[in-house]
Length: 78
Image (cartoon, rainbow, N blue to C red; front, side, top):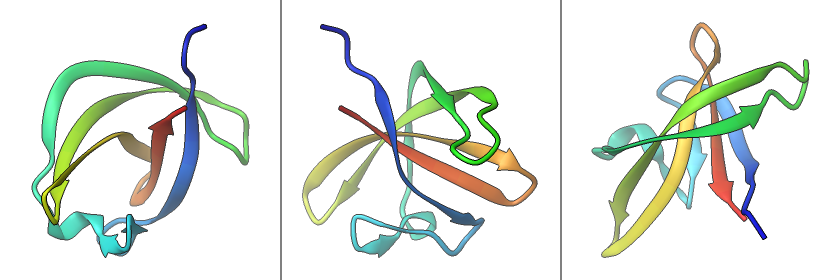
């Protein structure tokens, strides 16, 4: 069964709490992969980049991108 990407959170650039931290305060590492996601509000399809980030020694994988200028969505694979 293939995994899908589920919206975890979204918000204004620079102000998104994700995994208990402001995710914009951390360095994201691009994986070179893409995730097919859907804007939960307008149901528009997007292709967001997949990243990893180290938070307190835990490597987290997520997809992120802008739904509209300065409004970011963050997805996790389920």
